[in-house]
Every structure is written in structure tokens, then in C-alpha cells.
Image (cartoon, rainbow, N blue to C red; front, side, top):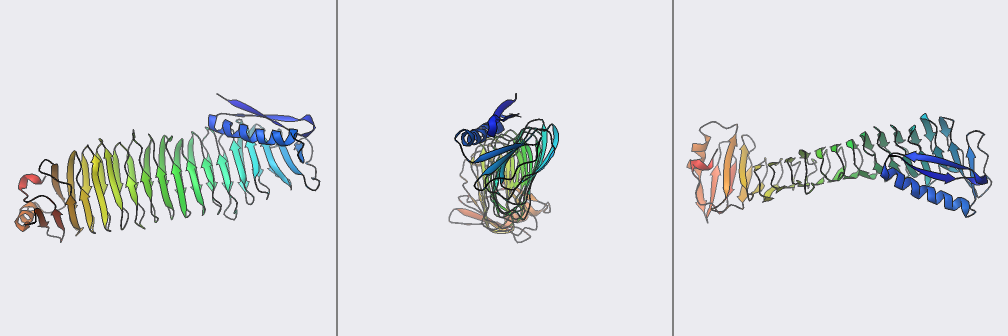
Length: 392
């Protein structure tokens, strides 16, 4: 259901814009109130409709350009507001001013380009393309409705993106950016850092690039490639779809699964991966010194050691400890008791490996260490002896 705002202009003029989502309407109403207060309060604000050429502004004045017919606008010098009601496709290029306001009607398919300036864009609902160029240094707040949108915030400013409920592509530049993901979104983060709140998203795919990511998940599924940064993933209390998360190769990743199916991959040194809840989850270490913990899980978990020094902490449900031939890890298993339900799985080893591992076991101070043929060593704390039944 659409909602409308009416924006006043000078000389008793006005324009009405419709918006197809509650979030864009709420923001549009706030901006409309701001403009209307300026008009009624006697501020130095002049408006021009596209039926006549926009007048030059007197010194000390700012302008608003109201489009109802034209589908192309280079915001005139000194103008900070562009409101677009043109049906169909329309193009707007920003001015170089700070704190600009650009809003379009739900029946306008807006293409917006900013090479300078800063401000807020609110697109009413049709499929929109919002583009902030690499040379732009200002910060932009970019908002779209329920259409399938493309948002490229490539500048060095710290941008905020809310792409609405559609199937959206979002590309982030070199700033420190924030994304509110509420649709089916594909996000490419090219800059130094990005925070993504996907609490209301249907599904989210993220390519981390060089960015340090902070991702807060929701009910929808998430597929995240952390790239070359250091990443934080916080899954939601209830997740209805698969979470597949790869930490960045810079290490120091903190990956906490939501309460739903999940596979988390470490990316580098000093990673911490946590399984949570009752769903089946898998934690896999990379090549650094990492911690994989299922202590908060009551479900079925698999913890796979990597090629570094990995600490694997057993869960409250059933835990499988997996060791893969060729990794040559030096691992420690913690959290086991005489009541623990656990299994050891050796992947890609010869069938005789279990027999050889049992033959190498050494017990000391209530713990047992086994050695595998590729150089992998695993110490099981609080376990005095292993038997063949402990292996799958």
C-alpha cells in the first residue's frame, strides 16, 4: 500500500510524491517536514518547476527543483533539493552542495549519479539505480523501495544503504559503510570496512573483498565470503535457512552461528568460531591458531581441525571431531567428560589409520594424545584412553 507526502514550494506551489514501503515513506515524511518548515518559516528557499528554466539564485538562497515532466536533470548551481514525479525513467545528477535531498515517486524509475556533494536519496519504489562515483568524498544516505535496485556507493565517504525488499545488488566503496539489508541482497564490499544488518533480510550474499565486515544476521539465510579482511558474524536467535560463512584471510575472525543450520569456515590466524543452538552445525578451521567451540550447542556439531594449532571444544549434544589427511595440525580437544557423546572421524586416511592411531596413544595427567601418519597430533583432555568405538 502506497503512502504520500506533500512538499511545499515557494509562491504557494506544492508537489506530492508516493512511496511503496513504510521505511522510505517514514524517511520521506521527515525530509518533507524539514523542507516545509523552511518554506513556511520564511527561509531563503526558492523552488522551480521543470515547466520553466530554473532561475539563478540570489546570494544567500538555496533552491529546490521539482520535476513533473522532464526525465533529465543536472541539479542547477546552488540547488540542494530535487523532487521527481516524472513517470517512467528519470535521471538526476547531484550538485556539489552538502546535505542535498533527492526524492522520487514510486512510479519513477530513478537513476541518480553523484560525483560530489553529500545528502540523502529516497527512491519511491520502482527499480532504481543509485551511483556514487569513486571520486566522491561526501557521505550519502541511499534508500530504495520494493523494486529490484542497483546501488553503487563507490566513493570514500561513509555511506548508509537501505535497498528495500527487492532483489538488490549493492556495491560498497572505500569508506566505512552501513547496510540495512531487508530484501534478497547481493553485497560486494570493496572498501576498508562495512557493517551489514540483515535482521530483516530474506537472503543475503556478501563478498567481503578487502573490507573488515561486521554482519548481524536475521531469519534469512546468509552466504558470506570474508575476503582478505577480518570479519565478525553474529547469527540470529532463530534462522530459517542455511548460514555459510567464510572468515577473512587476515584472521582474527569472530564467527558465531545463529540458531539454525550453519557451516562456518575460519580464514586465518586467531579465529574464534562458535556453534549455537539445537541445529546441526559445522565449524572448520583454516591454517592458523584457532578456537572452534560447540559449548553453546545442544545439537549435532562437527568440528574440523586445520593445519595450525586448533582448540576444539565439545558440545552438549553429539560432537564429531574431524581430522583431514594432510593438514598436519597440532590440536587439543576440550570439554569432554565421561558422559560426552563424541566421535572421531579421520578423512582421506587409509583404512588402517585408526589401528595405527590407537597404537600411538599416550596417556598423561588424565589426557590422551594420538599421532596420525601425516604428522597430525591430537590431545583429548580429560580422556584417559581411546578405543576403536570412539572412531567412526
